[in-house]
Length: 195
Image (tube, rainbow, N blue to C red; front, side):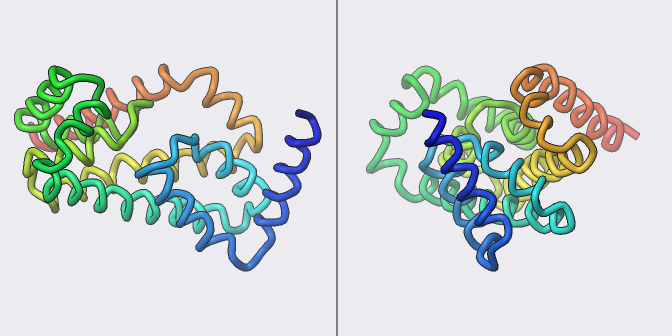
């Protein structure tokens, strides 16, 4: 196991200094957002740490890949729901959970997508649900940009200031950080629209 970790670390270091780091990261982020259940942070934190001069570009590539995945998921939900309904119920856990998510998107839309985007809930739930519910695409995209941008650029900020320890901080406090960030984001949005 130790050799596997050392080999992966060496590969990441090699990738961090290669010319293909940006397109590879964009592709990995795209795949992570639609099909591969791996935490992108495990790859992103070492890449950011070893490329501090390009940290914001790396966050941007991660965001771009995620948004491409989100758009794909949205249109899969919008166009193929009828054919894949049974499989989609399985992805959501049950038909009841699926209907609950669709109801939340129909009633809370933007806020729901934002909240899912910054919490540990898989973003596939929001992107497929938004497509199925026919939530306005541009509002969905705006919510995804804000939520996932906060995730990746927030991670870049954390890595910039505390280095590779960012991974341990995220792992230990992910629910607290996600909860506080969601509350701060909702408070900001409420203040903007209530004023």
